[in-house]
Image (cartoon, rainbow, N blue to C red; front, top):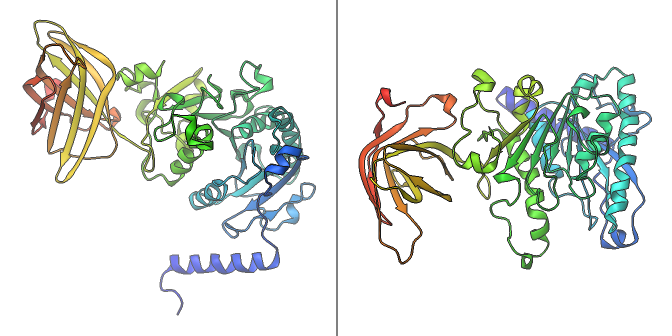
Length: 457
């Protein structure tokens, strides 16, 4: 007997079916070009490659005039289009197969890769921008064919990267906002910044538009475009990406490309990233935007694929700009705490705080240092501490206070109470506290936290 469980048999059946299907039809991949095509330019050609759970690693080329000549295209399944962006060197996106596989592992859908590499490969970026409209016309025609066979527009989800985000927007606009969802991953900024809504992606292009910004100071778009806009690490510089041009091509594409990897990670759903609506990244880092009462019991929205759960609330809102921070590599998610510090120095003190959590041999440190904070007598400061990993419940906590002064006197910070509340606040986990601490500048103080008194929160 080849398998002893229903799951094993299902996997075996899927593998066998995939083998049979792919044996009958050759596998297709995104067009692979090179730098010479970029120099001489490439003529636009749009190819649509279908992937399903039966052929998850074997793309089938669809006939745009007769899409249902492909038996694996099923009208009863939702359809997701994945659209790449500018390809200056002509190479296929390294992430495309990963995204397709992750989507199919998550949900039984028709995953259609929009291969417009012949048209996206051109050293003349402006020519590629012109081609985005033509790609949208092609997709509009194809979706109309799907409609003719009973496919509901609301069941269509378009995922566009960079220029692909605007292609999704143009396509959605052609259907009067009836496309179900557009996910825009760092929409291209050059040639689109300052344009009217009809000349770029806009939240009216679909029933629900969610946007991620990761490189708004270079290749991406700065202003909000969707029903919800996520600004990862403020929307510009991403942790782990090169800071100087001496790193080569990675310097130009790392921040921009991070949008894809963050979304890809959200499909795995192993460590959800909570996003917080706020008026600015600075206010978010100051811990001023950690309540999400406007979303009721649902709490703060989660970034990525699952944000659709907040659709109804977000569509009713005029605009939601949200922020979160990440690690430099997977797992990207961080563990956050709202930190409330009540001090009683007779004179005001300025400075920074670092917090280390320990549990057994595990430890993690958060530096709260994006600006110098003012600590005043009998005044409580609310700060945001974000840790690279989850160390809960903390058995020991270490605090360090510093001012950044090299030659000045060493100051003391007298703490009446420090309270660490796990985020998101909607979880209502009991905070940890400590009372009556004296912090000497640049000296660590370690203590065992205790549950806060109920009257303190």
